[in-house]
Image (cartoon, rainbow, N blue to C red; front, side, top):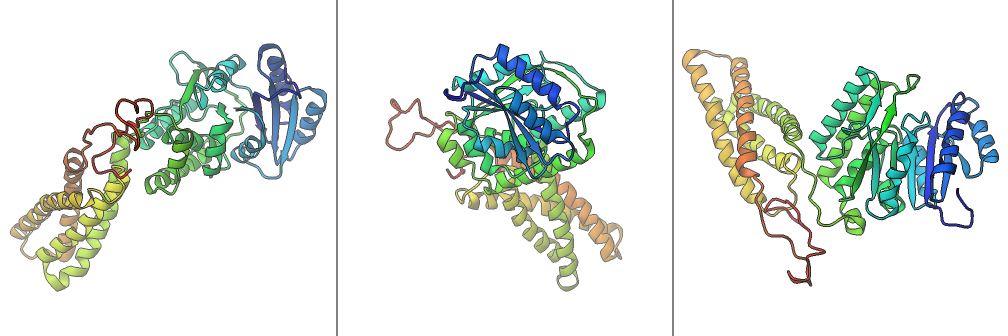
Length: 422
């Protein structure tokens, strides 16, 4: 049971919005569990965010009647907003989040917080997708959950298995660094927190859980999925461009040695494909502008050259994650070799077109070149991955002021490319 004169170990936050029908029963159940099962000091915080029914008054009544229950009222709706506000102000060593419906078996609560209280991990999550988890839910939600987490791991280079389970905990030190970086105020918040934590080198502990789906859940799957995809794009772009300052978090509390999360082949293909589409459109527009003045072959060469330089630069940064100027010149030279191969493909397509249809229109030329350029883009990806931006091994990085014999504990092992600026 929590004691007012003792340091607070755990703050269990229950965000709620219009939960008047279930809040009292669920908080009492949680309170009974904490009182009889937890050995650490604890507090339950009901985070009412802009409820329009009697949720707020019920929360206040529970706080008045039950020792260790605290109620907070927020004027705006949003699970992420509620968690950021309460966690930022909490004095607890470990900050916990539970869904109001208590779908997760509370027996997993102690295993969730134990590695954080001991200092072993920085973040802990309940996983419904672990092999030993027991989950009861419909096929539609199961398919959506597994698809979302697969997409997340494939495109964002993360390894945790379940981003959306409403059963998470974070140390106060990790929260202090990560919360200011989390922009989402709604359902994507905890996914964003986990992605940033892993990219900052924090240790994420996963706990298999028993979980029963709440059939009365008010979550709108389609709109939530849309916002999640937008959030993934925003965070991916922020990490790729350096707009999200992860390095200071790593320097302050990150774990060493640390391997930078690697974007899988699916993520690289998706990013390369998006850049390829942009490059193809730019090529078609440039060719259309230059063809009347310079002729077909010259216009093809110049349009492909300009788009190839841009394509190499974009893929260097966004698809293969390389930053800094080191090696950029060599990559552009290698990119020009790839460009030569692509030019041969598109030029060959023009030769074949003119040989078979001497009076081909400009529109036909553009259509043939666009198709050839799409094929050349595929060839370019293979060459970029296997040759231009191929990862190379290099010795471990030794920090200034240390020797190989004395730096083993602090040596940072990073599977970086040989041109990555650190």
